[in-house]
Length: 90
Image 1 (spheres, one colour):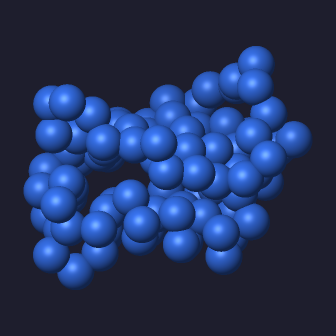
Image 2 (image 1 turned 180 degrees about the vertical axis):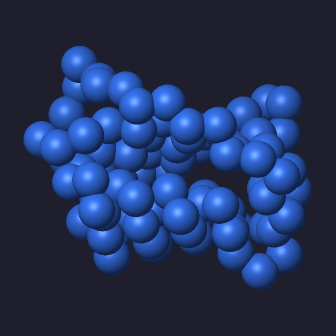
């Protein structure tokens, strides 16, 4: 199963393709989990996989796609009761 990491990304991260960017990076890295917009303008992601793959997605989240302006990424190591089959946009 590997590790689980919860990310809370703030800044200009909605309306710039951020979720699709993260989903693409996650698919290439081979991780599972989800990414979603929050009502307060942040983006939340949960990533499961081996530590190297999870670190790749976390690193990409700190940069974001063109047009995004990431101000901060709050990271929590976290295990989930649920094992995801893929990486989805919620």
